[in-house]
Structure formats: structure tokens, C-alpha cells
Amino acid sequence: MMKTKVCSYSFQIILFLLIIVASLWLSIEAAPCKPSGKLRGKRPPHHSQCNQENNSECCREGEHYTTFECSPPVTHRTKAILTLTSFEKGGDGGGAAACDFRFHNDNTPIVALSTGWFNHKKRCLQNITIFGNGRKVNAMVVDECDSTIGCDADHDFQPPCPNNVVVASKAVWKALCVPESNWGLLDIHWSDAY
Image 1 (cartoon, rainbow, N blue to C red):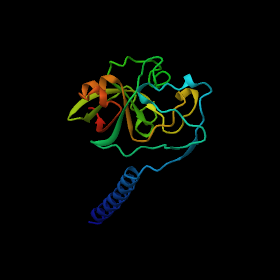
Image 2 (image 1 turned 90 degrees about the vertical axis):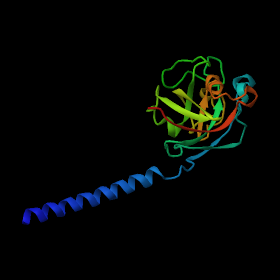
Image 3 (image 1 turned 135 degrees about the vertical axis):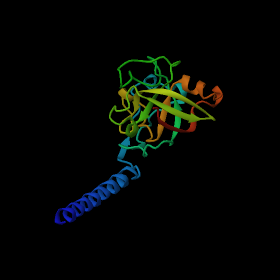
Image 4 (image 1 turned 30 degrees about the vertical axis):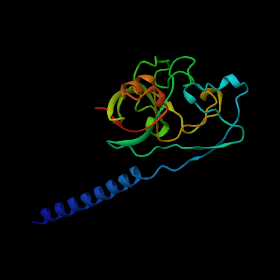
């Protein structure tokens, strides 16, 4: 009889501790993403060093840009802003992709994710599903849109990315049937593809 009470009491303690740990984990996971700092902009040494293809923004001397080490929590329908870039050599995406150190054809459905969502390369070469314009498309994560640094040669003298962007190739925009005249910014939802 005594063993049953001890086991029951131990089980209750373990259950209580699991509930505490789970609630702490959920509160951390649901915590809002706050800015991690500011970056002072500097102009590229030569005008040609900031590729403005696809309306990419160049850093402005002395302007302060917000940086983020996190992104909003990922859910089964994570809100984001879809933007456009070229992943080809010489395109406005800058250097080779962070996942495989290669350039990619813009006719391939590929994306770069903000730093927090990129998650230290844990989403590299994984597919995500993008929902926008009443359609959906799967695209492979090949790069990070760095939310922590920018305004340097490695980032094509462009500011740090916002913490809530999915940067897509032309193929993604075509698959979502967005008219080319409207390419650039689109409110979307995305999720990891399973």
C-alpha cells in the first residue's frame, strides 16, 4: 500500500514539473521578436556596388537600420512579406547562397528566409509552402536574408533584412500567378512543407 502512494506522489511531481517546463517553453516560443540593435548605414565606395535590380534598396550614409536576431514564431500559417530577388551570379541577391555556396537559376522556385527563420541553416535545402494570391507553391530554402548585418560588400551594400521576409525567385512569383507589374511585395503565409 505504501509503494502505491509513493509512486502516485512521484508521478504527480513529475507531471507537475513537465507542465512547468512546457509552459516555460511555450512562453519562450511565443515571445515577441524584439530588435537586437541598430546598424549605421554607409554608402558603397562605388555606385555600381549596390545592385538595384528588383527595386533593391541601397544603404544610405548615416541612416540607422534596425537589426534582428530573431523572427516571429513559426506556425502552420506564419505571416510574412514576400519579396523578390535574383539568386543568379551578378543578381541583386549578392553572393552565392549560404546553404550550398552556389548561384541558382531564377526559374527555380527557391527562397531566402530572414535570420530567425533560417535558424542557423536548419532549414537549408528544405521545402516550405508559400500561400499567397489565392494559390500555393513549394520552394526550397537556399539562402539567408540576413537580419543582423548589412551595408557591406558581402551584402551588396543593402540594409539588413526585416525579420519577417521570405525572399523569392521569379519562379515563385510566377507560380503564385502574381502579375509581373505587381512583383516586389506581397503579404503571404508560409509553413514548413512535409
